[in-house]
Image (cartoon, rainbow, N blue to C red; front, side, top):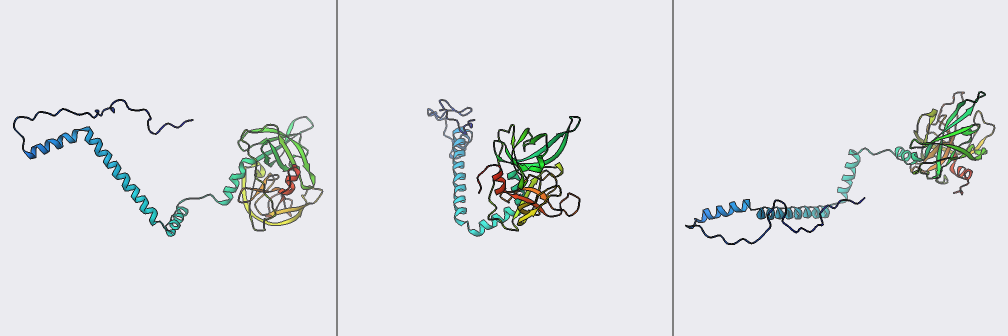
Length: 307
């Protein structure tokens, strides 16, 4: 859509509205009896005050003078600007403006790629029932989604809810059982679907900050923040039959429903897929230790080249 012109380009062929055209006027005959110098000056000033030409000329001169003054002020200010002035301005901005936290920025970057994964089964009567809720992350914008195998295993039907609220059916197109991973393909996708950015874990260190985004207990999308606690961990879920090796340990809060969701850096880049939590009791709640499959393994499950 074209922007309206700030100034009209149409040539003016006549006088401005309300302003008479400038033209030469014939000399007026002098009135009988020459007026005094003082009265003649007053008459000229009176005519000038009511003459539109004089008024417009005065306004033009004032505008030019104001523009020159402002320009000189800018030039002078620019020449006098020092590093101390810049530091003071930055400090003033930081103290007067509320900036989003690193965790908030990371979550906002990955949020368009996070999906809710709903699984359904049919009971003996043929009626559909909820089988569970988990999380997934879009890794290819045509609707390829990574999640946990235990989120979708045994389901008769899958439903994906995208970040914009739209939903679609989905099917399992690949599994990596040793890492509890499943690859889904959505039946339809939003036109503006965004894929998450993935990055290698090779340069990460214990203590690096991370964010987990998902649907704990079906609530969300929810965000929790923490740090990487370690690498190369092993974990066996209470209902699992095998150990999962080479996991990332983290302490960002995770609960049932977070499974399959992304673990991201402060840059909003996915470094792992949340897969389980460790709790020595029968309660399936977070006790400070969570595990995620490194994105290198997850990418291979989706048939993507390793980093």
